[in-house]
Image 1 (cartoon, rainbow, N blue to C red):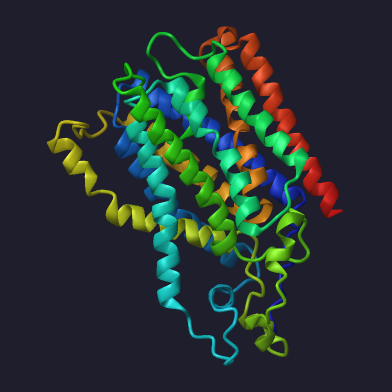
Image 2 (tube, rainbow, N blue to C red; image 1 turned 30 degrees about the vertical axis):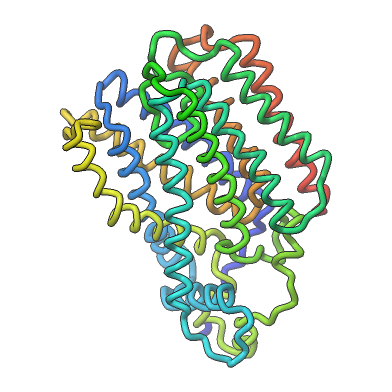
Length: 401
């Protein structure tokens, strides 16, 4: 009997919003646990934590795959066949030979490019944080929303949208208001704005502010470029039933024939057509995690030998559990935003990412410094960030309706 196919969720509906909220909450947990491990527990191994978090990305696809095969009516073979065909169609769209041979070389190049694209900005941030002030690094890093918008317009040949440009600029100004408005800590401890990356590093006296700022600027530009290139080259075309950013509809609707057309008369119990929501993005995320695990252990002994970050194991089970929490929440956050990056596009996703500043500030008020964490500037800045994201979200859904 043919398998009953589970309908693909509407990506622009409740599922996408729930995933977005879950990713934001995961980031708050990751930030607070990272600060707790490096301050209260005294385990200051920022590069090692970075390595663990990014290596942990590898678990998201197996978990998603196991859920689909255990809870839904998808079979393992239908999911693998669907992914394989989707990747063939995406990476070899103009081959009309009828062959579905997997483009292993192109896929390997794509995976390598994604791994480099997400790792290099993180490592540049890691280098910059010891050279410049945390306020400068945080403010400059979050200009990636501007870069993402500018690169999107240029690379995709889109028209400038004044409302979107204004929203992106306002969000960036909101970040600067929070960072420079007195909410950063003065005692050398990590501030609430230090959540711009996966790993919060203890602030030190800036030794080369100009160099650090330049490195952060390059990192921000690189991360903005990564988001746009991921949407263009790695993300699958948006499900036609989904509500996504209409700016990108022209990219996915190029008139090319899908390899799925070969299966129009076939038994769809053998092919998950198209792959379930988020499965392809989680596959790419997991592979990036595997590449990180296989390669980025190399700097650890080097940093130890040079006495830059002497390696030590966690001292107790409490630290181990907290690090596990950092890794798991980091997986949820990064996997969620990889899915949304392909669905909503880099403009809305990058600005939406700035909402983590608001949530971490709130969590710091509740679990950390208390009301002292809130200043007039931080309140104004957070309000501007929320308003800017609301404008972009409203623009996306009204255009898509």
